[in-house]
Length: 355
Ligand code: ADP
Ligand code: MG
Image 1 (cartoon, rainbow, N blue to C red):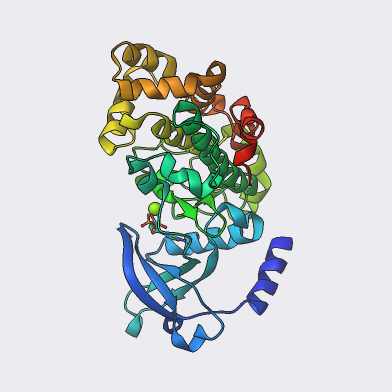
Image 2 (cartoon, rainbow, N blue to C red; image 1 turned 90 degrees about the vertical axis):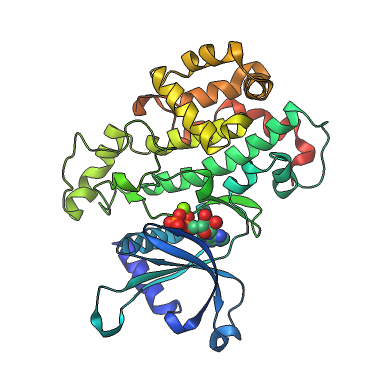
C-alpha cells in the first residue's frame, strides 16, 4: 500500500507533460519496439525546465517500461537514467492504440558499447571515472583498476534493481550509459525488465532477449511457473519464487560477458563475442575448459585478458567464472559480487584515484 500511496502523492505534486511540451531532435536509435530521440522541453516550458532529454516512442510494451521506470525512480533512482515522465499519446481519430512516450534526462553521449569499441579502452574511461591523477604506468595493472571501477559501478546499479525485485534481462554494454552528471555508469532500457514482486511482465518475452548476452537458460522461471499468477498472488509468492529460481542470476551471466569483453580485447567485437559464445557452448559452458582450449594458441591480445584476470592471485578470473556459469543457482549475485576480493584492493592501492 505504501507504494500506491506514494505514487498517488507523486502524481498530485509532480508536473505532468504532454506531446506539445517536447521538441524532438536527432534520432538516437531505433529498435523493434520503439524509436529513441534526443529532445528538449518546448519554449512554453523553457523558463523553468532546461537541459537535454531523451524521448522514446514505444509500442504496447511502453506501458511496462513506464511502470518499471516509475518504480526505479522511487526505489533505486541512482541505478538508472533519470526518468522524467511517461504517458500514452493516443492516436488521432482513435485508430490504433496510440504510442507510449517516455522521457529521461539526457545522461551523456556514450554508452559502454561505444567506449569499449575504442582502441583507447579502458584509458578513454579513466579520466571520466577516476579523475586526472594516475600513479601507475600504462599497463595491465592500471587497465585492471579502470575495469574494476566500471564493474563495481555496473554491479552497484544492478544490485539496486535486484534489491527492488527487478530483473533487467537485457544487460549489455549498449544499455549501460556513462552519466556525465554523476560521473558513473548507469543502466538504461527497462523495456525487457520484469518485476517479480508485483507480477508485472511476469511471462518472459524471450524474443526480446539479445542472444549475444543471454544466459543459456534463455528465459527465466519458465519451467516451474508456466503461467503468471494474478498480481496479488504474485506479490504473496514471489519472494519464495525469487529464492527458488534466482531469476536475478540471468543478469549476472550477462554482466559476466560484459566483464569478459572488457578484459579480452578480441571479444569486444560482435564477431568475437559470437565466436566466444560458440566456443563456450562447445565446452559445456565451462570457463575452465574454454580457457584450456584457447589459451595454448591464444593471440597476444587474447592472452592479455588472461594476464589481467590473473593479477593478484587470479581473483579477477575467479570473479568472472563465478558469474559465467551454466547453472543459474551457481552464479554469484550482484551483492555477493560487490563483496568479492577482486574489488578489495581497489580503494587501498589506488587511494590517489579516489575522489
Ligand atoms: P532501445 O529499446 O532502442 O534499445 P534504449 O532505451 O536502449 O532503447 O535507448 C537507445 C539508445 O539511446 C541507447 O543505446 C543510448 O545510446 C541512448 N539513450 C537512451 N537513454 C538515454 C539517456 N537517458 N541519456 C542519453 N542517451 C540515452
Ligand atoms: Mg537498448
